[in-house]
Image (tube, rainbow, N blue to C red; front, side, top):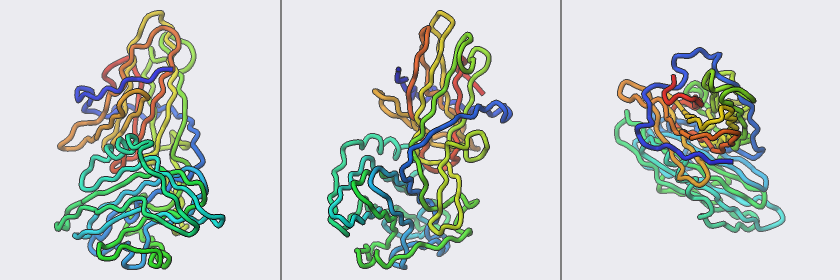
Length: 370
């Protein structure tokens, strides 16, 4: 197997989006398998405190999300905007629910940001935090804050001040996980947390009903792709680029690559863009031409934050946006000299939060592709 170098220079940022001049029939559906561990997703209320709504603070008797998980790994993601015109903190609190006694909670990855739109940095920082975080020992019934962060704010009612975070953890026993927002004067203790109730769902606080809070199953996805040059197994790049989507929440090409989220109120399940979930690829390129060929890979979005991990290389991410002021539609991150025979390239694609959930992608023999 091989691990591709990640092309990070700005010369690899292209103005257009992949597939922008094609019909939907060109997209190749992929079949993904995903792990069977909890994805705790917290995105509602999306805009906390907007015009006095969405006030989900513990001071008012609410938690934002509460989920019970079993022993093993779990992924926690949260993303909101502070529209309250004031300061508050936001944190993740966990409690040992193991009747048998002490358990150990080990954060595997952890990142937080507030006040900017570069959520690709959260993914990269979470990847960099691997194996550097201390474990926490919790006695029966005991709890601890895994993070507790101040959220930036603005005094302008028009300002969008985003914040979001990632925690990947492993627990040796059953655990209750809370996402909690609180005003600075009152950090909730156990006696307060025990009395909190879920913040009620109201469609006025969710955009298109896609801003939701709850839990799903699976955040680590696996798939393989066979490509050929000059004929043979899989899709023939000599004839046409290979187009595919990741986290296709807007279409019907991939129904195995989004995680349904059961909302905290139990009233609905939503397919989301799977922000911060990881898509692991094994791409088999069968070069049957007898000579080395250059293959290019692209990831694309009109408002996404794709990140790439390739073993042995520094992870990288880019903010992509196509608007009146930005023309950054595609990232040509893959450019490999593929020798004759079969080479398997392994890498991970992950989309940070904000913007469109779906990433459009392609492999091609051409360095410019639409």
